[in-house]
Amino acid sequence: CLNQSDPSASAKIADDFLRGMSSNDLYKGVVLPSPDLNTYNTVMSLWSVVGGDESQVGVNNVYQRLEVASLGEGNGTHLRPNSQTFKILLGTNSRKDNRFCIENAKEWMEKIKTLLEELGDKEMLSDVDIYNAAVSRQDNKIISNDNEYSPYWLSLGKSFDGGFKNITDDGSEKGMEEWLLDMETKQVYPTIETYEAVIQAWIETGTWDGLLRAEDWAKRSVLSATVGLQSSVIPRLKTIKPIIAAWALCGDERAPKRVKDWIDQLTMLSETTLPHLRPGLDIFAAQVVAWRQHQISKMKELETPAEHIPRDDLSAIFSAAQNCSDSLGEIIGKIERHTNTRDVNSYTTMFTNVIQAWGAASISAVPLSSESDPLAPSRGVNQILKTIHLLESIAALPDRTFFDDDVNELQSIEIEQSREHKAFLFECLGEVFAEALEQLRQIDTSVREKKVSDETRPGKSFFLENVFEVEKML
Image 1 (cartoon, rainbow, N blue to C red):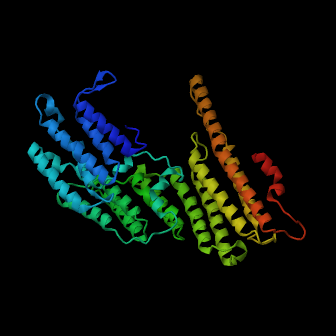
Image 2 (tube, rainbow, N blue to C red):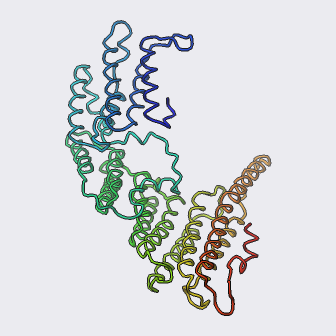
């Protein structure tokens, strides 16, 4: 039931099992124990991630049975609902068509107030977590197997993948803002989780205005934390990542600069008042992704055969590839190069995006046969090989040596370093080399399909031109 690979099926099976426990049915010859409050909360939680009307019907049905059980004789008193119960109840019923609905949230908050007064527990009315439950996404509990994005958290901005949307219905997001401000008037002060829910809601609109509103709320949390007004809203990397992800994926020409601006701000904050905001290599990688996405966006705008691409547009495609390389070089220069642990995924993401960018530029430039042309395919091929050599030089760097009075401790550290180094070599170099070979193959295929050659070197193959490099990578 807890696997949640099929949320609806899991919830139904768990609910049936709960009914069996309530009746002390036999299960494989064993009498099922009576459920406790945690059992009810667990089944409600499973229903909460299903979504839609089915989710609300399931949660409310289980709660009604809990109410009946809690009023029963004997041990029924231990089934009294707690804050977790009400959080699930409010979070599920505060939605309409799987979006936050402030009218529903207010209606159910009043119902919960009445229930708490009947239970004689008015203190729970000031529990900020209950208010946060109204705006939190229940389906965040489902583990996603989507490997489309790397780093994985770029999926937080997937609404922007392919460009800005033109959706005008933002009632749900504005309702969240109203809910947050209403909390403050009731002296139930929002936490960073409240801000993150509002930020993510605006990000999921996929719109230009939504992204700017998300940035405004992120800046508000930074300001509140840095001037000491509210320690409960100190931003985390988790707070800012959806915004960086949105800029990285949108493909807009302004995006790479906005990603860099956020990275610079995080770096500055980490060096002054908020050290936990120090950006990791995965966040730096978003800058390379942003340039690659901009290049993809530019190429989609053209949608013409390569031989008809205007030279200015071709220059822009090459420029984006060059900016990918420049960003990579800048990042490599900033990070600590002598380190024990290497972030395989981030390295792979950065280097493969750079190689893909130069591959795309070369294929776009295939009709140009002059080697002296700065927009010739050979330039892209040379940059692919240059990128490979950069990664090789990083992989070849010796691991940092730690000296210790205990020789056994030193040997243990060296063995661990060796394992990490081999893992880095196999995982990172393998994937990046494979991408480089694939790009060379695609460039050669494009040359053959367009029957492009110059008079002195007919049937040119970039594989054969660089056979030594190809064999070494293989």
